[in-house]
Image (cartoon, rainbow, N blue to C red; front, side, top):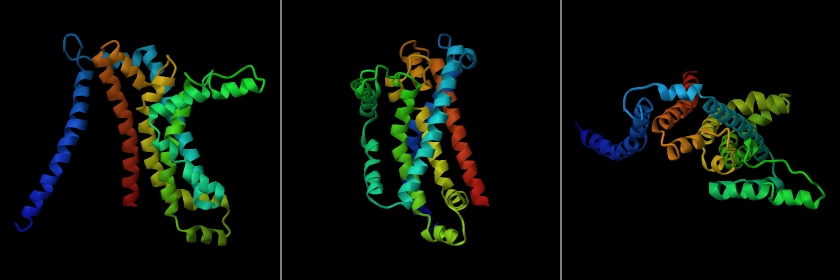
Length: 278
C-alpha cells in the first residue's frame, strides 16, 4: 500500500509510450495481416495473395534477389566493419586518426543525397567513367541500375554505423587480455579467434540484426539505382500498391518481410538468452 502511489505514477508514465507503440507498430501490423488474407474486391477470406507471392515467377525472382542482396551485403558489411574496427582499436598514428575522423561522414548524409552522389560517381557518364576515358579507356562497366549499384549503396550506408558499434565493443576489451595472451605465446590469429571474437560477438550479432533489417527494408537507394527487374521487395511493394492498387498482395509481401526480420530478431534474442543461462 505504501508503494501504491509510486506504482500508479510509473504506470501513468508508461501509458503514453505504450499507446504510441500500439498505434504506430501493433495496429498497423495487425491490419496488414488482416489485409493479406482479404480479397481486394469482395473482402472475403483468401490465400490467393500468398499463393501469388510464392508461385509467381517474377515475385520469386524478386524474393531471391532481395535475400541474396541482403545476405551478401550484410556479410560484407560485417567483415569490412570488423576489420576496420580492429585496425582502429589496435593501431595508432595519423592514418588511424584520419579514419576515425572520416568514417562517420556517411552517417550524416541523407540517403537521397548519398544515392545521387553514387550515381554521379559510378554511372556511365559519371566522374569515374570520365577519368577512364581521359586515361584512354573505351569501356566502363555498368555499375548503377544493377545489383552492384544497390550493393555499393548498402556498403556506404551501413559500414560507418556498424564500425561504430563494433569499435565500442572492441574498446571494452582490456589491453591486459591481449598482452597476457601474447606473453603466453599466442599468435595474432589465436588471439583473434580465442579472445577478441568471443568478447565481441554479442555486439556483432546486434550489428548483423540491424544491418539485415535495414537492408531488407531499404527503399531509396534500390528505387533510384536498382534494376527494373528483378527488384527488391520494397520497390516491388511500392509498385503493387502505388501503381496497381493491389492492397492484398502488398500486405502479404509486407507480412513476409516482417516474418523474415522477426526470424532474424528471434535468432539474436535466443542467442542472448542462451548466453545468459550459461
